[in-house]
Length: 474
Image (cartoon, rainbow, N blue to C red; front, side, top):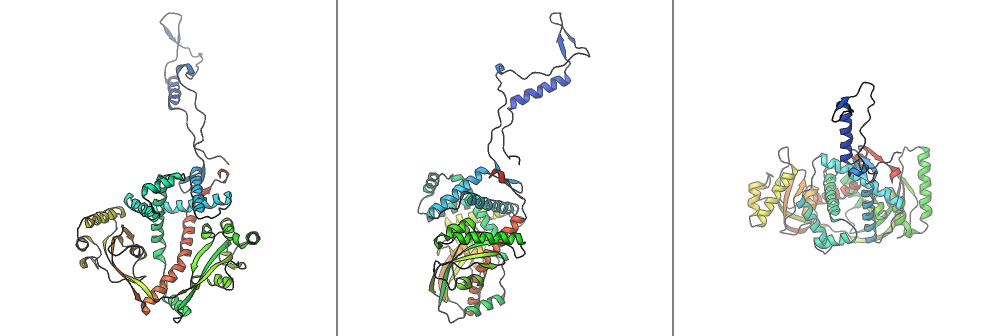
């Protein structure tokens, strides 16, 4: 395969000399000195014409430079490339994160493959986000970085120094955070709002758990997935079974499960050692629950088969918690600027930020809502909303509201309705009514479906993109 490189071209001055030579040879009358001083005579038809020689080194011009390798292309995603230097930077970043978590990394080859796959998927999704008009302005980015610094107990300058001490460019870090925000907004729009939970699913869920249970068990489970389709060929099935056998041999010591998962698993949670985190039994697939129900913490199940492939499961831990019949409810107010053909998301965000600045300088929130909010249901009430239970509001609005303290205003929040400025007024806990219990059950069912929906959507985006991996360059 031909190496994909970026090279320097000939110096511009040398190219100009060559062009000049061609023009003179093609169009000027060729002459030669005559025997008479100061006279020139035209050459005859049999005369031989020689091309103009390149300028000598003594004339101050250097010979053409040799090609210089700047970078290599390791993958093409639609019309964009991923270079070896970008891949190396992401690998280094991934290793740094694993080191912080005290997690042993997979082999270099496996790490490179995993990181490249993640970069390809992200690049395809970022291209989709750009095509559909999703942007993140610098003000939103700065606020996000300020929050990251606060969460780590340092200033932004301290965060910059920490990153640079680890060899991470602060400019590259900012770009990574910008892309994470873009991808989050894209997933919220493309996946979160598509999930539908039917009433029959809610009925089945409530009937299965019963209302008399006051304590509930939680399980912490990890998995290793060897993906193979249901209609796989005999050769594909044999290859998957051989991989399962290698994994089982590597798991003779259960403590190696996280490292083996990172190296062999085809599941998106492999970067976390395969851990699915704490789950209530009703939030685990029945196949998984049956496989681990008889295990003690640390033990590994027999391999089980699903529509996605072969699963090897480890019960990391189990615990028992009280089931509460109370939930947090919120009362908030907001100002909405709609996004449409005349008003882009960027313009709407600027308007919301301007409104927020005016409120911070002393203008009354309620008056600004009456003057500027485009939510007809709340504008004349000063933007106030009714008490909201979990699931009452769209996911983006709800997540932002949950993160506020009473009296605090949010950053601009994008939802399917437009861009919001949210202020939390009050939070309290109330017992669940039957209707609210159904809403809570719907949210649990939604969480169960979300991970698989995101995974399926990611595969769709990847399948619709042109991807070429230059494996000779890895």
